[in-house]
Figure (cartoon, rainbow, N blue to C red):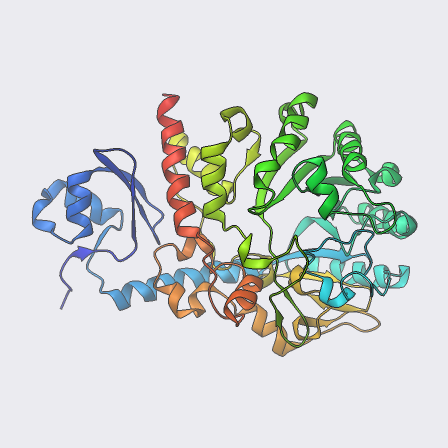
Amino acid sequence: MTNQLRSSDYTIFVKVDDDNYLIIHGYTGSIDLISKNYAHALRINDLDKLPDSIKKRLQSRGYLTHKNSSEERNVVRIIGETIHKKELSRRYFMFLVAYDCNFRCPYCYESAISENGSGWKGEVLSKAMIDKAFSIISSESERTNIRNSITLYGGEPLLCKNKNIVEYIVNKGVDYGYTFSAITNGYELHHFNKILGKGKLNVLQITIDGNERIHNERRRHHLNGDTYKQILKNIALAIDNKVKVNVRVNVDKENIKQIDGFLEHIKSNKWENSEYFRCYAQPVQFQRISSEQIVTNCGGSSCADSEIKLNKAQLFDFIEKELDQDKINIINVPDNSIKTRLKEIFNHGGNLQMRSVFCSAHSGLMIFDPRGQIFSCWEFVGHQFSTIGNYYPNFSFNDENLKKWNSRTFYNINSCVKCKYALFCGGGCSAKALIENGKLENSYCNSFQAIFQRSVKSSYSEFLSKK
């Protein structure tokens, strides 16, 4: 017997003004504007207050359903499984160039394997390792959907002393048809001018921690001290070479009010007008993990964990309430990709993109390190519990660990599969889930619902203002 028509468990309600709501469906991806009276009736399942024409429309879009809660969750699982199969057909590659760094940042999440910076082993990829890695990449490309960009990672990947090996990686990769990005502190970037630019190393992520004083306190060179001015010079160098620079600003309660200085520098150099520059803020994470246990107290006055931590919702609050509009236009906020996609939908139609996992750590990322190991999560490189295999001298996967990482999907997390945001969130970061909640298999929401609501409301408001 068919179940009675009812309101779906997966309808998201976003109040956009006193009279209207946007409703978004969690597994059809539908987005619709509805009056507050109809939204209220839908929310409390009082369907008698809905005209037949409205009921028919809402049912066609997924907001009304004959499925019960269990049947709806099963639909969400099936969609998640289908998406994950497609995601697993892709491959993404990173070279961890060296277990070494020239900075000694107090919040470094790799400090457990570097003994707080004093025990970096200095291991560097060899040409033989690089050759073997590229042979694996070439083999994988014959049977999977390969991303055509490879990321350089560390430690710090762009150390001048490793210049020859970095150039070897990039030049060999170009021969295979790849371009490169790098996650770098940017301090020694000027030594790599030969490989900067279109078709080679053409995307960089560089971190700045607020104004000059705060940045120099936190992101210090282990020999030379202050780093701020040199990094700014190298950002300008990269932009001049038509390299896309994504500047990440790490913020917490101590430094968030000091980001104005850096934003003023952006404006004075007109970087915000360049297609090769983007700036975004992220709450800094203080917890770290060792190979044996979770480490939550990283020590030091600038790393007093929960006392100065920000979550993403708090970061949103500050940016919206404390910054002038011209500065808000410069600095992107967390999960801005949601807002960007919503703007496209409001202007041109379509549905929100769905995913089964939070990131590529669970869908095909392979990180090659200088010890001949392969990892799938960049936050846990160097830790034996997180290796998914070896590539040098011989290539083999650790099937047990690979299965553990690949099966960390939202639909395998009970609390997630019931959540109406699950297909947009993907279950959150597994590394943060392990650090914050004790298990890789746990969810990590990180204010996603609040951020999603804000993104919908603000993108719709911007859409109306331009009509």
